[in-house]
Image 1 (tube, rainbow, N blue to C red):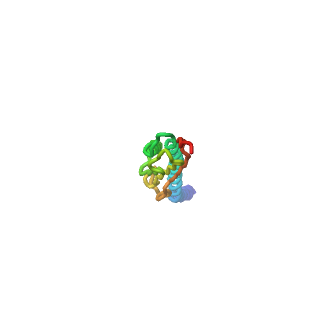
Image 2 (cartoon, rainbow, N blue to C red):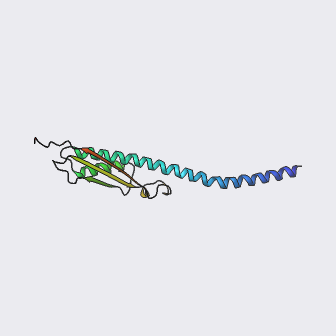
Image 3 (cartoon, one colour):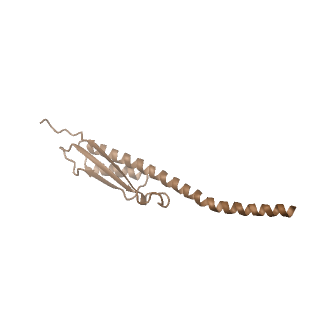
Length: 139
């Protein structure tokens, strides 16, 4: 009777090991996906803010496209983004400019915390367009 009970326990121990081996892969896949999508949302939020703040910087009198680019890059540097591009339209910004658009693109291939399995190939992009605050004179 004792040997039959020990034999059953040994069979269950083997079953637990096999079940663990099957489930651990799924567990780590969900863990990596959660980390990647959290990073994706952080980057998305910062890119939106960088585009908006850069456009705000560019609409004031005396600002240049370089000022807007520097502002966007400063925001992106807070989370350590790599390979970002900032496009200011128009460039150069003149006194007669009515609107300024700033587009920020960040490739996720270079900006994940783990291997870019789920967000690889994606690019986070945001555009902000604001009217200038420049005096254009009386027509």
